[in-house]
Length: 190
Image (cartoon, rainbow, N blue to C red):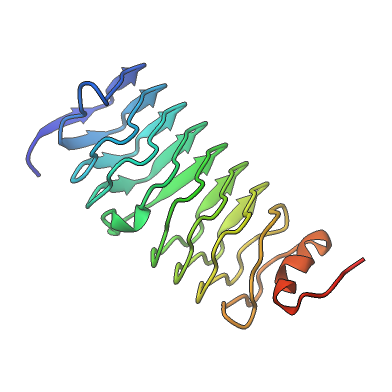
């Protein structure tokens, strides 16, 4: 990969919309309160990096690599994660805004989403086996031909999942969220 190699770097309060992040590999780096909105992060490799309080909304992610990368308190609106390098793609989201993002056809086995807003997120043909969606708002999120086996939805809310169009074997749901499995029947539940 062309570009620089940065190990254990700390980037704080940098506006990358003015000075773009250099193409290269970033390993074990911390990005604190940085602005990446509408930037081009294509062909950049992030390995064991932490993004905290950053805005990556609408960033371009073509062949971007996220390996064991954590996002906390970040705005990630409208991101096309399916454009990322799928090899060893592992991410973790804590208290993030992921509205209008897409994970189309990605393998996200055992991924953890905690306290996230995920309005209109696209999980079409995604493998979410054994994923944990802890206190996540899935309003109008799309689940179509999605693998949801052993996925934990017990603390998630506002989801609508058609069990006939998705694989839900051994998925976990709370009794209060069970109506999200029956939406297509347009029935009233008291």
